[in-house]
Length: 224
Image (tube, rainbow, N blue to C red):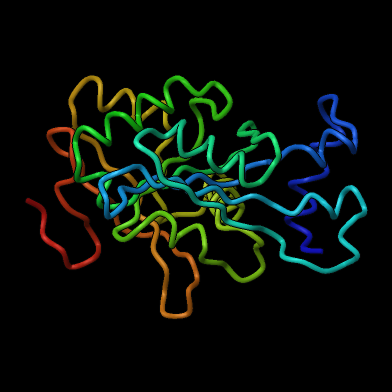
């Protein structure tokens, strides 16, 4: 099993009051993606690790993570559909990142609804890292990074090392994003993308102006 995934899962047992039965019945979300679907609905993607490695039911096989998706007219509605598909209780308390898709960021009303959802979702917390994708957030969650079982763990570790002196990587928590939007209606959100091999990388930013996407920096795309 990947060491970084194991380090993510072990605290679920050593801290809190989980037992193996509770872990089997819970889906611990690592990463959250929120997009605007082609039909104009919210498309939510959740990256969920394989907890069978902790409970001993994996037999050494299977994927290290799955990405579950659903669409609905509301974010809670889409998440509810994912919960029904997984037959497990979704838990966001250990989520590392939320990724907004470009189409969602370009829709002022839907972007505001997404912010309101995060404001009210006490499980994710206000310190969760926010990223923007020029394409879809779903693509980013399905992407990879060599040595990491999930993009959310890669970003979390990258930011941890940034605090120790790494340079060239910007960071935006939901708390900072919410403050910027409520006071000025404008901000920048770090951009996540995939290279030609489907590997995640951070660089550039989404520029939010007038409560919606104005463009991306670091991509050759102009700002409106």
